[in-house]
Image (cartoon, rainbow, N blue to C red; front, side):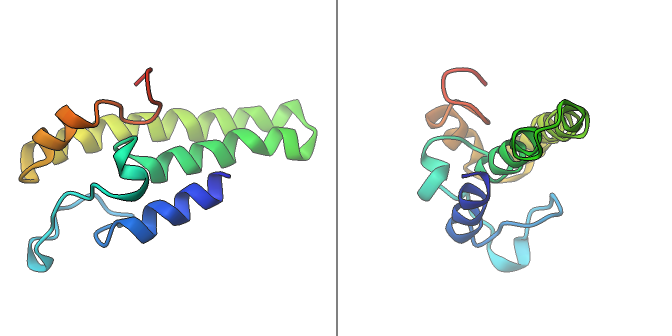
Length: 108
């Protein structure tokens, strides 16, 4: 499910990138369709789900260590990316007001 969500996020956002930057040369706009209707960073949700599902798939509690680290790093990245997008991407503030949650509806 994490992989599927990640692929859906990439397919729904023509500006999806590993690097956080405003792609002015491509007319960067806020992605509002697909999973972006529910949370502002669905690609990161997918990555976190994969990281946290690994211990279950591997049957190992030790796998919670890297899975938890991945989750924490992506939570931090989400907060920092949101600051950048709010400050630099036109229309993101309005979108953030409409789609209130970054990663988990009803929580954050």
